Length: 162
Image (cartoon, rainbow, N blue to C red; front, side):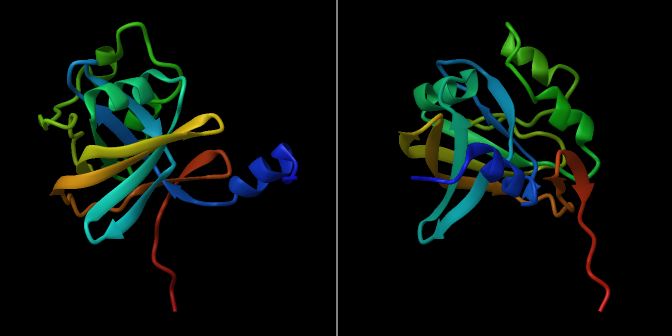
């Protein structure tokens, strides 16, 4: 038996998360989506984990392309986060329109994002989501403060004054 879904969601809204856009490119096409479920998995070997709705276009494309890129957005990129959020348009590449992306074999790297370019090592379905584990093949560390999401809105990170 587990906790009530609404109680769980209310508690999770209190957990701050970096805002990321997961991108992929390959035989299944160039696709991107805003994702908050991203974390490092291990440093030996360098690996990350993302969770994607299993019935989404981004999940299907990542699994077919066997690659993905996690773009940690800079704090002023709310417009980019919103452009990649929500249901995928009929032409997923439209989400990239007007962005000066850098090409990566694993997926586009968005402007000023810290990007983890990954080969898909493993994936499993749990409930409504695909858990995708990637080996980090390349890294672009932009050195920017990240955009975060908490309680249904975007936030910026500031150091705590001691």
